Length: 266
Image (cartoon, rainbow, N blue to C red):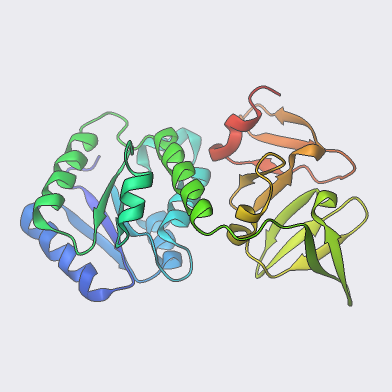
């Protein structure tokens, strides 16, 4: 930790962000605000550029949500530099998240509008964590992100999918979900892979996942979902990176740090 800790504040509501910054300055004058962000994409860029000690992330932001920003950090932060990852404090207007997802959280949360007495508790917790030799535990963050993603999925689930309506070149096809080997994000689209073809859909993965059978489909990266029926083996290289061998498909998708535990027994 630096002599003077730093923080990023990300919130799409400027008045609430300013109020949080003012209260932080009053209660923790040693804390330096390294930057602010009005959406998730700006937040992730600022965190990667500034490497702050702490990130205050609004859960509901335009672009990447606060959860998705934290997921990116948990998945992609270098294994050999985990201690530099920021401590995450989620800021939310929704009591549901506090009750369901933060009961045994490794990091903290604040409810909007942020109250001074509750922020004081958060500051004390952060100061204690920053005194640890390895204040930012990526594994703890990963566990919490999985909790949040599961809660988010259950809260937004629609009817189960049976078929996928997708574009294959100039043709729109109805693809049975059972035939799908892999879903993979690509810019504004999601690629749908079967043994015989590749198709495109516009539905984002975060909306697809709650509608897929959880016993058959698993997210292995923020941009990848696999059909477990087609997973033949998991391989690990010298750096610890885990990749999957798929039946009937040449792609070998990489499993992020968040989801490696799913394949430990393979």
